[in-house]
Length: 436
Image 1: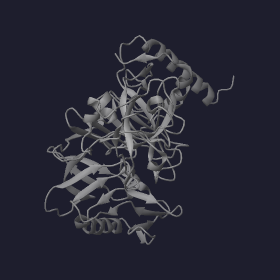
Image 2 (image 1 turned 30 degrees about the vertical axis):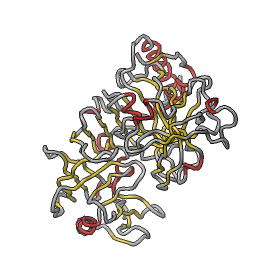
Image 3 (image 1 turned 45 degrees about the horizontal axis):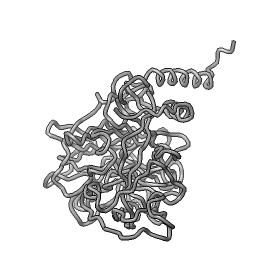
């Protein structure tokens, strides 16, 4: 017998174990937590998850993940057809659930894409609940209409092993055309809303979700979206990953569906920047990390001073303002650490070099991945790059944000094996279980 490590044999063992776990889990009355794979697009740096939607037929839709838009929207006119699809008419009570958007009574369907009777295909209705979904990438809005259909997830009852495939109740989303996808990569078929709005996916399914964005692109790295709460087991960490959380209250009195919280201080390698007051911060998966103009100059000045003390050699690479040559023997751990102090207990969101520096042009040059913000409200935006490999949980019911800082500091993986299991399960488990 060959004693060398055999990855195919190990993968077969993992799959067999997962299939057995799924068979047992079909006896559960409802899922504990739902799980979705998250991937990163190498060109746009947007984050995707693929979700099965509809029945007879069921199609897999690639959604861009967004934390700000009020509702999920997808292209209903490029091959999506489902017998369980239902349009939402303007007179239906569900049309009145829209927050911050006034629905429009469209008397007739768009006959360019809806030939014949309006309700016969997705996106078509005789009197649709007309809305204008917004594209957060190119900041445009296009006409759409509210609809609903069932979607499918895989459960993870104990936070580690897979349970059955579950069918959701009808979920409300908006139908749009292909013109709504400006700035998205070609494979994007929709936008998945994880915002605070009543029509977001968490609001319709579960008030608690967790997100771990991958730092690698889709060909080599994967993240996770959990819907329904923990426990969260991310091998090789031996305990529930929620034990790593720092928890802070979210600000709920803003007229927005985004996630805001307060930063009490900003420190770079222990030196605090002089701040006149608390700074508002928000999370975003579609915009870069930005620092408001009133803070940015002080921030860059202090970072440069700390980098100089570490003998980091500065260079210029447009369009970045602060870049360094990576000398032999230099490690990302040597980059000055940025601490955002949050909450009344002095909790910190710690940003290490892997989330504060980006390699540009060629290996050996890295730049500070921070952008100067505009003239509006003083704010720090924690963007997708700074959230990568950080574990973030949002509880809509208690209005709390929990985060772990970088999981790499705890030698955690982004569960690539779990992804392989999902791919196998999608072709073997079609039990049709429903939410209890």
